Image (cartoon, rainbow, N blue to C red):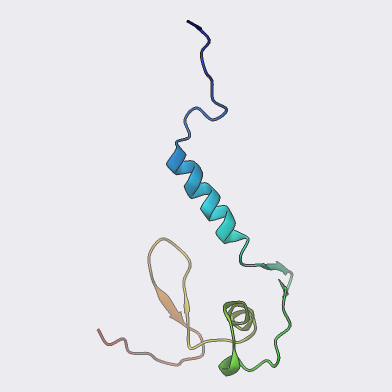
Length: 97
């Protein structure tokens, strides 16, 4: 009988965690868009060129992301742990249940 102990590279990593991490990494590479701010300018890199800059004629998710960087909305979502919004272009808004 062989008394060699088998060791793992990631001893606390379960198989389920490995598959979840791999799936998350694969999903992150599906969205090839990057944005960063430099002073008062927002730089956006997207691997597509829209046919026109009309948000009503958007043909995909990446165009929606690009238009979200260009055009303002009626409300904006406030980043954080809780869901909350603030007015952007709208003067007032009434939320009906």
